[in-house]
Image (tube, rainbow, N blue to C red; front, side, top):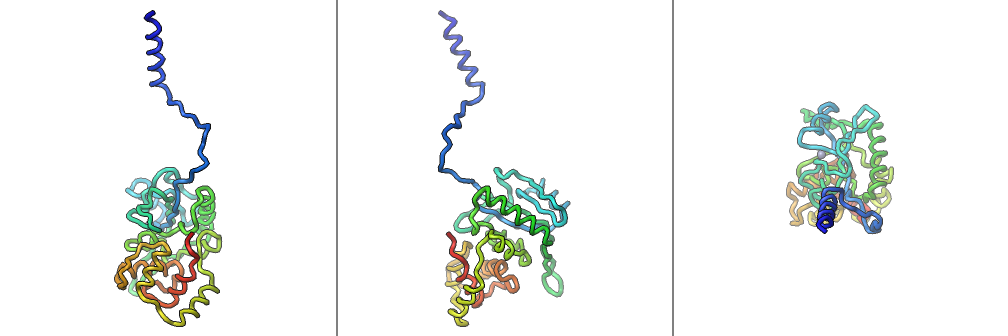
Length: 258
Ligand SMILES: [Zn+2]
């Protein structure tokens, strides 16, 4: 009579020590990827330094794109969090590391010279590889086009990468990001008829586009930084953060974020 309880106890202990019983037969239809944003950066250093910093320098990204090699480095698994965005905000969401994939593009960034700030161009093959990678990530995670952004979009007070020479227009042509149609921009310019809207209008429109921006109606440095980030993306020829009629037309022509 004593053997049965002992046997039961042994089985119970075996059950505890063994693997958990997980039943996968009822997967829910109602689920989505945790990845909602893709954030683009430049490294502001060369490949060896970038590999060193991103592998054990206190910061990281999921992918690193060299300038002159056909391969792409994956340094953090897509299911895990990389440390690339920092204090950030886009479309009301904050601290985007948890919900984004970070891509670092090897590019020296800029140098300040007596003749002004000099930016470095991106080689076309590097951009071609980036577009292929973005299409792959977007397809697998269902990232909304409005959520493929630059570090300068989500942290305009601190960051300018990927900079004014980053060809956002090519990403738009590849169907990856929203872009104002040229004809719509012309229409809006005609409607505005040379009138530059008030600062409060710009602040409201920039917020609608996704940016974190003050709403006090004053053209302070924080507002200029946000407008400069917008201009850097959609009109890189002039990105001084000064409200002008062309920036207003671009904001009006930007497709509404769904
Ligand atoms: Zn960055």
